Length: 492
Image (cartoon, rainbow, N blue to C red; front, top):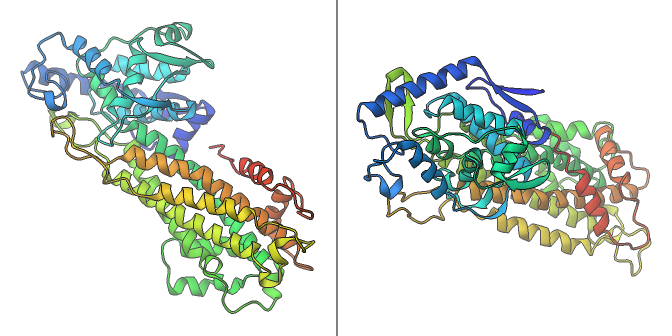
């Protein structure tokens, strides 16, 4: 895909990832532009009739009852500047592009009342690769106004932006890119800000990355089956059909496919393996199910009119809404984070089984030389540390909010925090998967006469392309780091 063409529907997580990480350009159909013109006309007519319209001729939040008597374009600039209260490290380039693409996708649905000219300016900003410096802290999930302010500031030539790898004032960045600052009309500032585009853009990338890493986790679990001499009968289709819990049937099929051709099918296996191995299909199936729910929640937002107030073109009126509020999105990422943690803990448990004191016919600590050799056992501490960090990130934050704006905004969802901590788990989990793969490959190599399945042999070869068999003790941390970096295959 060379261009993401916005139509007002059908934008996917893969689309956002392509814009964010492959610099795919963004355009809009003529129908979108027509929709923007019609929506703007309804908004202008409602304002001309004397209707009180939030953020156009009234203040925001606790200032709702304050009439805006100044020229409304000036107020929109004031509104943008006044919401620039974000702090913390700026978002990485790919996340900033994801945020911009997400907001454009939402705006293309219609309903915001944004001036078509400002929409075109936002398109030009992302296509000319001018990236506003967006801080990471300032959203409580009731829209991402504070964090979207820098994007609107850059559009009007204020604040700072990155262009061609360097940071400039926004005015300089726009000039270097051959662009001019936008002129905001009535409600344009609020339309740029009043959405959860930071949560949605960052969430889209988190879902894309989780999808990739879950597949590597499947590979690691299958290799652990080989290394531990697991009983593949636990993956028999009839067992899964007897209790077809979320994702379980498909996960068992995937694991069994990787074990095709393995000598495990010919061996006398234990009647029952440890639960982290025996229940891998149901554990990973629950994660796959949670991932699908998060994907659906993100894609609903990407293709929805999330504005407040909302212009209803077919009804020829403007109404206040709560569509910027994202409790279902927050809950989806809380669930996804818990499912990742559960899966990661099972991976850690299999690692401990593999590297323990001579289980399943394996030498103690997976050391071929024995004696005082530490083998893989020091790596158990690293695994335990990773697990501790993941468990910490898995703690829910959905209910952690305070009433703000004099109690007008007395509920929040902490959606961005839920998304961010879920995304932060991924690097920790990636290192755990690398640990399990290393131990699984070592165990396979120490299991005399064992034959891997077609898929597990590929995984084994991947590990050995990065880390040699451990014979004498050596630092394993660098091996884990190199393999984890190889697993960062997020090519969208």
